[in-house]
Amino acid sequence: MRLIALFLLHLYCSTQTSGANIQITPNGTDGVIQATLNDTVTLVCESEGDTEDENELVWLRNGAKINLQEGNKKGSSRVCISPVIYEDKGATFSCYLHSNASVTASVTLNVTYAPQLSGLEQVTVEEDEMLVLRCDMRANPLVSSMLWKLNGSMVDLQAEGFTVTSDGVTSVLQASRVEKSVHGGTYECTATSPIYNTLTKSFNVTVTEKTMKFPLMPMIAGLVVVFLTALLAIVSRWRKITKCCK
Ligand SMILES: *[C@@H]1O[C@H](CO)[C@@H](O)[C@H](O)[C@H]1NC(C)=O
Ligand SMILES: *[C@@H]1O[C@H](CO)[C@@H](O)[C@H](O)[C@H]1NC(C)=O
Ligand SMILES: *[C@@H]1O[C@H](CO)[C@@H](O)[C@H](O)[C@H]1NC(C)=O
Ligand SMILES: *[C@@H]1O[C@H](CO)[C@@H](O)[C@H](O)[C@H]1NC(C)=O
Ligand SMILES: *[C@@H]1O[C@H](CO)[C@@H](O)[C@H](O)[C@H]1NC(C)=O
Ligand SMILES: *[C@@H]1O[C@H](CO)[C@@H](O)[C@H](O)[C@H]1NC(C)=O
Image (tube, rainbow, N blue to C red):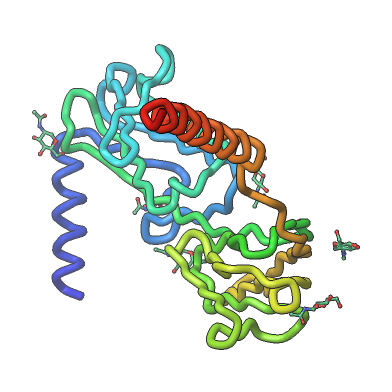
């Protein structure tokens, strides 16, 4: 406690002695501003100093300069984050005095979002081909579980040649060689989140008959050529042989 008090006192003193101070509004709780995806967040940075109008301000997003228009730099400057995107999660916006970079203030965005899971997707896959179904699992806070069901029961990873993988962004269900009786039906992926309700996306998977993937006509043509060449060779050889026997 005493350390914190000393620290605050020091901060207070140093900003006072230089006669300059800047502040970002809103400054959130403990410097963290809560937002959801697609929100608009407006941040205002204001300098309070002796020579207020001369105090040019600079904004940074994660250390990279934000381009500001003339007239949005002196004394007070505004940045608008619209829309808030996934990448804004944890992004730090800071503002400092152009004349003295140690006079600075910053806030961090915390973006909350649920996985984008809804609706019914129609999927057609040929027998013996690979089935790949994907579900978004990007969420803040993280999803606590992601479940895959087929016709209402849990997908049997052991029995039916399914694999489920995830890279933290997408959950992928795969079956390498599709069989109509085993893999056709209605699939669902369901994400459970600590703050959103459970979210589900469905897939209606239809397995169709295998079509001939071979290039059949060119192959027949090729075989015919080979056969005719062989025949000609035999015929000419036969002529030679018969000639020589005469
Ligand atoms: C810049 O600001 C810091 C902190 O307010 C202060 O200690 C320092 O003297 C200032 N430097 C200049 C060159 O004004
Ligand atoms: C946050 O803003 C409030 C009101 O503008 C101000 O009183 C407070 O000192 C600020 N906190 C920080 C950490 O800058
Ligand atoms: C955000 O906007 C995009 C594009 O307009 C939309 O596809 C998406 O569903 C929106 N997300 C949320 C959580 O509102
Ligand atoms: C961000 O928001 C989420 C959801 O409200 C919360 O669980 C998490 O603790 C917050 N993170 C920070 C750094 O504030
Ligand atoms: C799932 O249900 C559909 C429609 O009732 C059925 O045609 C299909 O064979 C079922 N799939 C499995 C793997 O039981
Ligand atoms: C699933 O697909 C089959 C074949 O395309 C179709 O007959 C059936 O109506 C679909 N079911 C749903 C719920 O969309």
